[in-house]
Length: 182
Image (cartoon, rainbow, N blue to C red):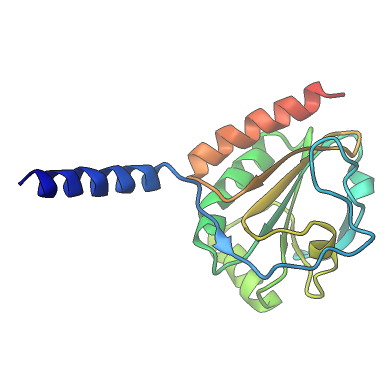
């Protein structure tokens, strides 16, 4: 009897711990090239240019003066899709201080366009089909978000996601911290 109770408590504890964990999706690791910098707070964010879903392009260095959230994601990644409403909310509330660019490297442009249309997202979505940006920001999973302060310095990084509500609070605090750094 004691063993059944102990097993039940252990299983309940594991399930509870799992419910509080951050989730992420496996992702194709990119080899870090010799020119890649370490993606850690305090280092300069590597510059890049990507094509946007709605036309045009985004260049990181053109966004100096704003906090930039660089998010790597995919439509097949549940946690990526769950946190997208947080970016939409941030985009609406902080557009004067924050630039978001959500970079997709694994889905076709048709798939991404359909996803954006179905969900009504208005923040910039970019494509990196050749993994050029991904090579500058290597990761072992997605969603992967890098917060860059207005001076172009990495302020914070996040691997994985919680609910959109929780991610909004986490990113809002990260934005405030990045603004305080300058």
